[in-house]
Image 1 (tube, helix red, strand yellow):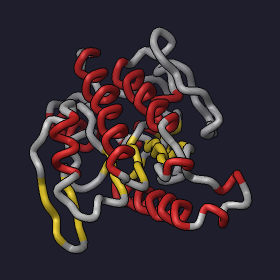
Image 2: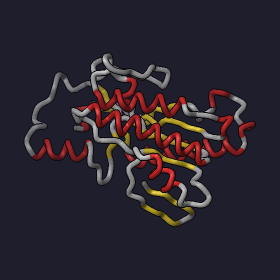
Image 3: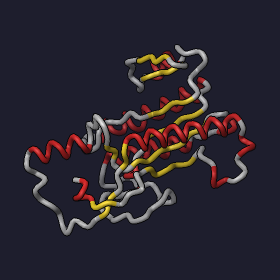
Image 4: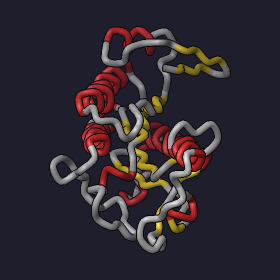
Length: 228
């Protein structure tokens, strides 16, 4: 956990499944942080449902409850675009109105756990108590020092496993550069803090950020196999 106050940054190595450790870490800063960016998750592709549920769901619940109790104003969660995808069907020009997909319809246990956490975050939105939440749903993140897709592609290329293409290669896909994703998180936090300070400014419900989820991509539909 990284806590920032002004220009100083403090790192705490804690188990966020332990509420006391979370409360203690958050309580070290005075005043309490205005925003929490919750980005923690095991990587995609593991065969460990228990791990995903513990980290992505229960630890998210703990962090939400501690944050609200201690007076944090805004909570920005890094979800995934896969929460609305069953890992089988084609999704074309979808938006946030699509429902979350859970087991057994959901075929990926990672995405199932992220959908549960996403739902939890949005349900914890509580304007009356001054606690505003939002969920950011990126599609396939890539960028500098990427331990995920870029590393995986590079390793597979080195092993000669990218010489093969499935079907005609015309299937389109959306990727998300990490810099754009960071920008989306910052914009979401700024909007939540503005809403917290002056809730009367939100006269159009379609402009609300709190309690809402947002799909984030580069807005570039490209053939998947060209990227790979």
